[in-house]
Amino acid sequence: MTAKRLSLVAGGIAILALLVVGLVGLTSSSSSPTQPSKLTLAQMRARLAGSPAPLARLHAQAGELLSGGLAALRTRLASLHGQPVVINKWASWCVPCRAEFGAFQGASVKLGRQVAFIGVDSGDTSRAAAASFLRAFPVSYPSYYDHSGAAGEAVSGSSFTPVTVFYDRSGAQYIRQGPYPSQARLEQDVRRYALGGAHA
Image 1 (cartoon, one colour):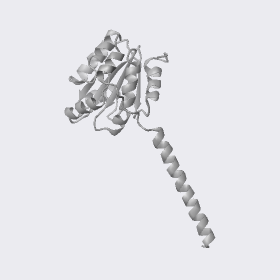
Image 2: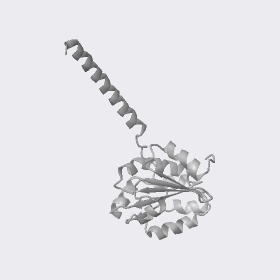
Image 3: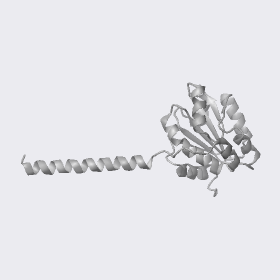
Image 4: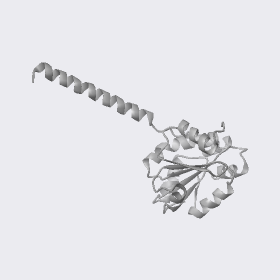
């Protein structure tokens, strides 16, 4: 192979490498996690003051890790009958769950006067680790501790995390597997699947 040909091949490889690096950069930037909210639990509650009673009861338990598993979760859902609901199934060890938590922090404050947000800490081996995570990433709603994963699987039909489950006012369900890349995308789905296209 001549020197000229070798030079052309090397140049082509260099261009191809630059294209690959550029595509990887675009992909990672478009799926970068939403930054965690800097709001405290008290500030979240203040912004959600005056919410309808069923939602206000959720806000009063903001950031808490509740016991009772599937039975307690079903009781809570029954108390929210007729309300739009968003359930986020997560775990403290789940990297994609952690990456999307900023989106849930923001969306739950922005839309929490109209929609009930609930967390399910599913399959977490340590309650202490889950509670510590919630202290670091506070949300305006409670989560149910689901050590066995039974509650999360019953609600989402999946053993994977993260999963987001939407219920509209009539109880129609939509399930989305995988993390949300941004708060805007999450809010879009909340409006579409929980609020039924209503403008929030």
